[in-house]
Image 1 (cartoon, helix red, strand yellow):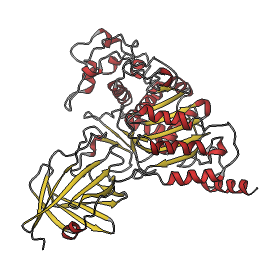
Image 2 (image 1 turned 60 degrees about the vertical axis):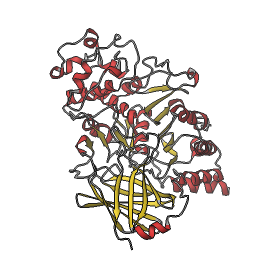
Image 3 (image 1 turned 90 degrees about the horizontal axis):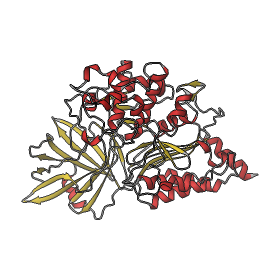
Image 4 (image 1 turned 45 degrees about the vertical axis):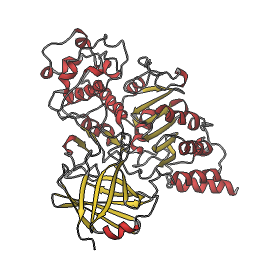
Length: 538
């Protein structure tokens, strides 16, 4: 009896005392306990243990059953309040906009793509391009050689696409094509007079209480469509649940049910000859839908580079959301199929296990990407440099000087640029979150006009969240590691080497030599070394 009462109390606390089973009249999805929804906490613990011992860098996960969140976690410095790059998981939102435009009689899937863009037409159009339809764009069956197409910042991307004649008859061959999805975004803007982002906002984002998000644009002011959308983990879960409910939310049909069923059903074979994984173990060989993939266990998923996934299991009424910087995304999906899917035991509640649930709670709350650990102490250097200014030589990043201030296991790293000082706080053995004006430790801020931003006011300079830690690799070498959690997937690491010659302390700052980290397009670490000197240290 005591166990039953304890389980009930945990459920009551964790669900926030909500009794509305719809769980959709509030900003957050309803919470529940795994066993209450027929899922074993043991399987979720095994999933988290497998991540700990594996090679995949996961940033967040959320597990839903019967529309309720039964497990969730974020690996520090990532957190529930931060957006995350979706990469190609953005594509499904673009396809959804096409479905809505079809339901509003703005276009048909059988419409020829060339008919929409009279002002971007190249001098000549090939026969295959003339036959290309909207549906061919949705199913990645354009027939182009995507590698043969390029568009510069000053070019019309639509013209570049139309000028790339398909080498195969449209509708016959699956070939993943990012520009096909961009053209879907361009179509929405052409037939509605709004950007893709603005079109979806009152139809999808607002009804789901998804706010404070953004979507990158191309130089023509068209949302990229293929990539560039940033959402929080729970935002993704809401959209997944909307699809699971056949487009219905709060008793409103946001997306036509017929479209959801069409968009999630098999449309074309997706075999890739270069992928040697047997089909029964290959989640990219189960077929392609409308900007979604079919997967094993009769699943369908939103799919973004480096492991941004929303995986729907309709047979089990379950959803798994993952954000990541995974090296092997098939291995990431294997974790879901091997641990989370089998943890679903029943359509109804199973016996509670408070001890296991408490273990799961502890494990979820302690998730962390471990910062670099110092090998030695930099105490002697700290005494000489803390709170002092290093004047830098002229450099391409227009940094005039840098400061390092150490206090209570926190290093404040400050830059002066254009006589303005910006500070990033870094933790010793832990992550410190700071608001930055730049998505780089050294490079200046970029133009924010290249984004659609969800705000009802002018955003003069949106703050960029950065989680940062520091360590000493030797007694005179400081490493600062930063994760711009909403702007890139990997980390930036700069190395600061201090040296003392003839009474003057000098510093050299530059990027650490490391494999290329995945991040937003065009974001790279500085390739130059910055040099500065602190005079008269006595």
